[in-house]
Length: 340
Image (cartoon, rainbow, N blue to C red; front, side, top):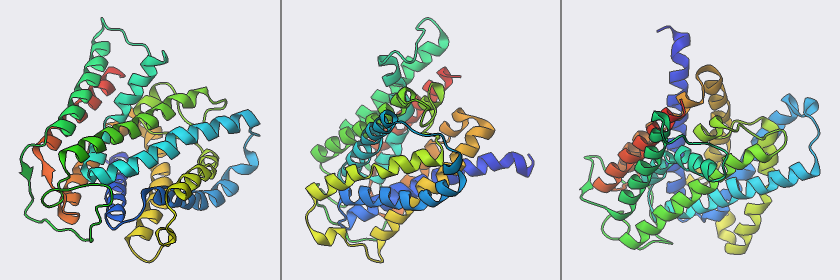
């Protein structure tokens, strides 16, 4: 394989490594006590500050005008897909682990497909092989989520096991090491799936916006949004939603201070690297190899996250999490195959 042919493979590895870094740094910031709602606002603000000059330079002059109704729909899309999704995700990450966040990401295409079917935007032919594969994928995904939430099993500790940061358990009650209580874990799993449901609903509802913020149809089921820079900036301006929530739920001025520590690194990384770098990489990979190729690389982030979170954050990986993650990946591939 020539170097040109290897580039898409190297790109998806980099994309999933960046997402693994997002799970790890977000969890690390919350572990040292950063408020999740403040984090979400700063993350959106950083992304907007980074992308706005690029959008002004490359796209704004030639971009068509946007009507008031379209701006309202963008605002509502932002409320479901960014404000609700990211804020619920942040709380869920405190209750659970970075590994679980990476695992449940594999359920996003399945959840999106299920929502599209409920809204009659996607048809399933039950008498065909592909239709059966889609339904089986949904069932397998549900089984994996249930196992992760309800079955812990023995802990699987790695030889290298160290936590780099002092931990503050603000929202959770824990047992030995970094293993949350059963009640806390189940609550976190439910919130994590709720976060992915909001994100999946966002992907489906994009097709209702004139001019389309992103992809719709099969592509919106298989991958995260691929939109132009101006759309991301407009979505970022809706960070006022997150600001209102953060101000209402966090009144301590100390939580709003960013110093040279993991909090600032996490905000900058998630706002700039995740939003900026992966945006271009994902768009390029979809253009070269298609959306299914990108979606099939999602489990790589899970592998990276499990290894790094156990070694660097001291997270305990349980047998139930591993078995559930395998089923989530299996459900993902089943639905993807059914869409081919």
